[in-house]
View 1: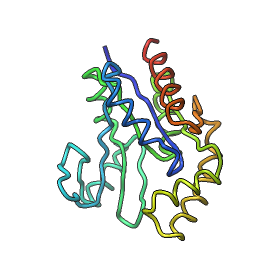
View 2: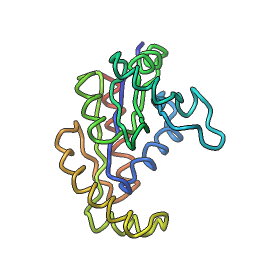
View 3: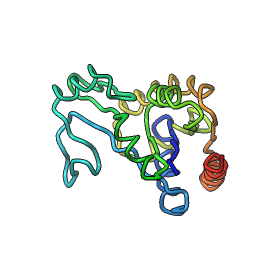
View 4: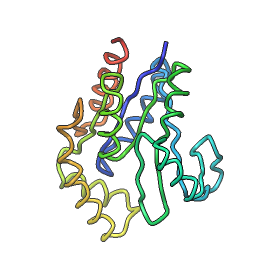
Length: 190
C-alpha cells in the first residue's frame, strides 16, 4: 500500500522537531520516514549524499527547477537552494513509507496543494510570541539580533496557521505529542 504524506511547519522554537523526533522514535508502527531534500550547499561533517540530503551544484539545482522537478524549493541565500523532488517522494511512498516533511510554511502549503487529501498538514504553534521568545533565549544558541529576526519571522509564519489541516498548540509537550500522534493515526487509517 502506498504511503501518505505528513507535512509539519512551525516557527523556530515551537517544538516541531522535538515532536517529529518523538513520533519517529516512539511509534515505528506509523512507518514514518523523512523526505530527503536536495540542497546546493556542500555536505557538512558526516553528511552523505542520498541520506541526509541529495547534494547538487547550484547549476544542477536550477536545471531541475526549470524542468519542474520540485514539489517545493527555496533559495535561502544566493545560489543556496533547498527543495523536495517529486520523484523522491514518489519513490518513498511506493515503498509504503509515510513521508514526513519538515518545511517552511510556504513549502508546506505547496505540498498540501499538490497532493490534496493524500497529504495532511500540521502547524505546530507556540502558545504565544512571549513564550517563543523565552524558549529561543533559553536555547542559548542565537545572538539577540538573530532571536529578534526569528520572532519577526514567527509573527509572519503564524498568519499561515489557518491554511493547515490542523493546528497543535505546544503549550505542554506531552499533550502536543499525543495530540499529533492521534491526528496522524486517524489520517493513516483513511
